[in-house]
Length: 125
View 1: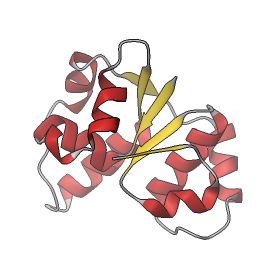
View 2: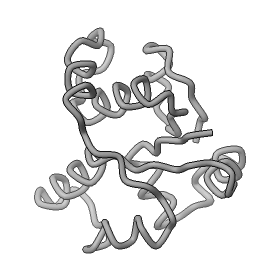
View 3: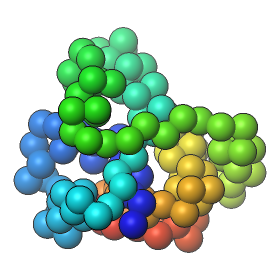
């Protein structure tokens, strides 16, 4: 199974994994699953860090690799899909993650139940 981590789930995994539901932790830890982190999440983390809205590891790309997570780049197809999504959610970072989840047939690991409105397969964190 392919999993795509929402940004807050990635941050919880790095800082306080017990904030994540047991089911989500089990799926993230399962070596049979491919766990992806979107470039959009790294962009969001760095953007919010620059605004002093959060703290996160300085070398987030290294930390993601150390966790064994794969990187998911933003493609033109992802961008087109994100722009075409219904406006249930206005956060551009979340819209990109939703589009990537749809395009990559990945389960979205999130605590945000608004994602359900898009019909993406979810694992609630």
